[in-house]
Length: 417
Ligand SMILES: [Zn+2]
Image (cartoon, rainbow, N blue to C red):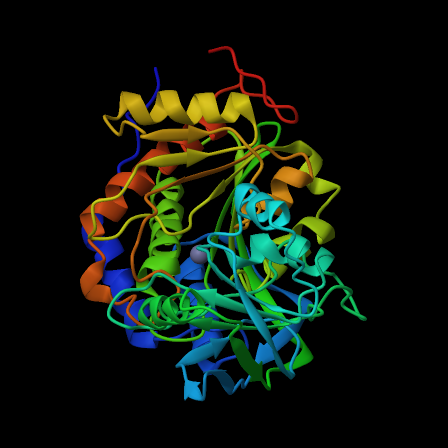
C-alpha cells in the first residue's frame, strides 16, 4: 500500500521565508548570494542528506550599471537591461506593442524598418524577444515593465541557453537596452503618438566579467533504478529580498528534503539549489553539462520556482513532456489543486529548460501573475506560506510518485496510468 501523499508544512516554509528575507538580496555575485549558499549547505547537511556539496561553474556576470533614458530632454527612471551592450545610443523610437508576431506583421505591412532605431515594447519576458531584435538590427530597446507603484523592475535581455565558456558567445547582445516603468511607458507612448518622429537616447555602463558561482547539491539515497531531480534557484534578481522569486522555491526545496528524509523512497532524489538562474539559467545549464551521463537515468526533474504568493493567481503546470504533464495534472487534481492551464510546450524561462533539452522530462507547478515579479517590491508580506505549501505539496506528491512508482520509467517517461 502506498503511504499517504506528502503534505509540506506551511509553518516551516514560513520560517525559511523569514530567514531568506533577512538574508535579503541574493543577486549573482553579491554577498547575499554567498550567505544564501552557506545557509542552504548548512540546512541540507542538518537534515542528514548525503554528499552535500558545492559544484562550482563559470559564468559571465553582469554588474554595476548606471542607466539613462532620455526622451525630448526628459530623463526617465530606468534600469539597465542585463546582457545588452554597454553603450550610449540614440535613434528614432518605434512602438511595437508586445513585440508578438502580429505586432511585427503590423509594422512590416506599413513598411517600417527598425534597423538602427530604438524599439519600445512591453514584455514580461524581454529575453524572449532578443532573437528577432538582433535579426532586425535595432540600435536600442526600451523595455516597458508592468510593475505597479512606479517601481522599475530588473530583467535580463538574454536568458537561455547561456554560453558555457569564454568567449561567451552571444553575450552581451549587439544592442543596448533599458527597462522603464509602466507610468513612464505610457508617457512615452503618448509622446510617440503625438506626431512626428521622436528621438530616444539610452545607455548604461554594465560591466560583464567572468565569475564563479556554485550550485548546492545534496542527495537522498535509494536503491531503485533511476533518480529524481528537484531544483530551486537560490539567486535573485538585482534588488529587494525577492521572497516570491525564489524564496518560495528554496523554502519548498528544503521542506521537500526534510519530508523525503523521513520517508524512504526506492529511487534516489537529488536536490539542487541552483545559482545564477535569473540572469541566464547558468547554474542549471552547468549542472546538466557536468552530469550529462548520470542524467540518462533521471526519471524527471521538478523545478520549484515562483511557487505562490499572497495574490490570487492562476494554477499552472508547465512541462514539454506530455506524459509528465499528464501525471502532474492527475496528481494535482487528486489533491484538489485544479490547474487553470496545463502547458505541454517547451519553455525557456527557467531551470527546467536545460533538463528538458537534455531529454529529462521536466515540470514546473506554480502560481505566476505576481505583480512585483523581479522588483524590489517582492517582499515577505506579499507571500503567503499556506499558498506556497499547498502548491509545493503538489510538486512533493509528484516527486513521491516519481520516486516510488516502478511503472514510471526514465527517458522517455512512460507510465502505466
Ligand atoms: Zn525565479
